[in-house]
Amino acid sequence: MCSGACARLKASGGERPLRRVVAWLAAFSLAAAGCGGPPPPRLLLLISVDTLRADELGVYGSSRGLTPNLDEFAAGANVFTLAYAASSFTLPSVAGLLTGRYPEELGIWNNESGLPDSVPTLATELGSRGWRTGGVVGNWVLRRESGVARGFDRFDDRFPEKEAVRGWPERSAEATTDAAIESVEGCTQIPSTRCFVWVHYQDPHGPYDPPGDARERLLPAERRAEDGTRSLSVGEDHRGEGVIPRYQFLQDRHEVAWYRAGYRAEIQYVDQQIGRLLETVESAGLGDRAVIVFTADHGESLGENGVWFAHGSRLGDEQVRVPLLVRIPGRGPSRRDDPVTLVDLMPSLLALLEGLPLDSRGLGRDLFGPGAERGASTPYFATLGADEVERVGIIANGFKFVATKQGGVYAGRLYEVGDEEVELSAAAPQVAADLRARLGALRAGLERSAETRPQLDSEDRERLRQLGYLDE
Image 1 (spheres, rainbow, N blue to C red):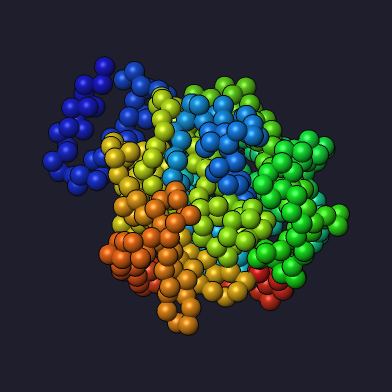
Image 2: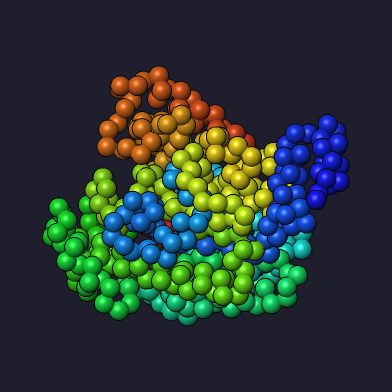
């Protein structure tokens, strides 16, 4: 029984702020193996995938059968149906994921700057509390010079392969999984060790070049789609506005169906590799001792609003709504419809694993504490695309408001969450005005607390520009 510890906890409740008591309760419940609860987690596995739309997974409604391993994992997890990235670019989104701070607060709009040294990360916080930490990344944008490696005892950013069009350094999903398995197995060899391992997959980021014949097997179904046989010309940049982005163009192919089939074949491929990683966790006997989080940095446009096979310049759901699946030992599966942001994850995991109270400087909320499902985050997202146009957005009270800076002012569009077919500003002007004001207040606060960010050196910046990642 745990009456003594529970009694002490209860007795101290009046002397501590409520938030600290709730955080202590969360940590206490995880550590309460002697009270009949599950043993405390000794592995935190964070899996992020590049350029993965939520609606491509079966658990989010897709009938294509591309993700059997993730769908099986989701059956035992908390499934967040309204999860949003903080940006449609990789580095700002991942920075928010790892720090619990919005990219604008970090001074990061796109992929050309780095994570400020002064900002704590999930790795630095866990590492300072005795966790061993390892990172494995497949996207060159997330190499150690970007700042995301800070706090990791071992950070594997080897890129032995080249992408098919630009010669971009990358690592395939198979090679990434090999390195991730090595990291998990190496870190958890000592039974008393607690380990945090982050794995970021590059696939299905373009150019879509899946292995094997998966594209050809998916192609007939894609050609049966309404616009599947449509052909597009090739653009001179990477925005995909009415054209195939230059960096996506392969084998002199212009057919929409061919590129969609390639994207989905890459999703199928990365699902297979993630299945291999999850099986390693289970076979190592860590299944009931591992907190596993799966998400994506952003999505991809597949023709929505005339944007083809691109991301980074828009904030539609196809680019900023992401999958979020979380499995916590001792907790059953659930389906959560409360809006959340990836910025919530870092403080939530620290509260769950270490009982740390939420950082008063951050805007993330605790997703796993008592009654969390009855709350709602206020997802905020921002991007500065190749057209140098600022786009910012917010979700609140069942609505999504996206503003685009034009001529020094922000023109806004209002939608109901989950339905971007009908613009509602004229029908609901007060809602639009309220969200505009709320967005403005939020941005002002973020700008006041913005950190000074390190800039890329001229060589790295020029390399990014030549490879197309600054105007993607």
